[in-house]
Image 1: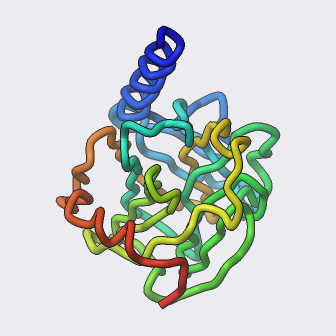
Image 2: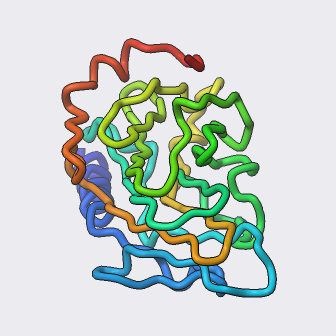
Length: 218
């Protein structure tokens, strides 16, 4: 019982830290600049190369958490020329100048609507595309082991977290990340410990949808 209480307290602290998150200056490519209140904005500086550059958040979430059903984060697209990725990834051994979204332990959505689950491309839909002026949220439901997206307050179809679930998955620490490609690309994030998005989207209303829908592209 003591071990269980200790683990529960540990998970509660992790969830609290996640809600107070910010971008990690120590896990940020040198071509990106973190700024703004609480270090939530990311800007792609002008350099000689227009390539993938990534930054991770300071605090992760663990798949072992069970008492909290859903967690997510949200970004607003301020500037973007071509494409951008956001999602969750296992930070270990990930390089900030590589395509993180193609690596195992990564769950992400690309601005042209491409979906990557555990590093595998599973499909593409215009419904999931986003551009300058949009606000996009990426979340995980612990109860169903599914990821889901919202765009400008609209809930989008969820996807199974992985084809095979294992105890090893529960040990993963998943960090929010964003990858910017072109000069002057800019986003601003909001990390939420509660279930209500800053854009007004109420995820509580969609718990049934998250649980009922299957892994499929529309």
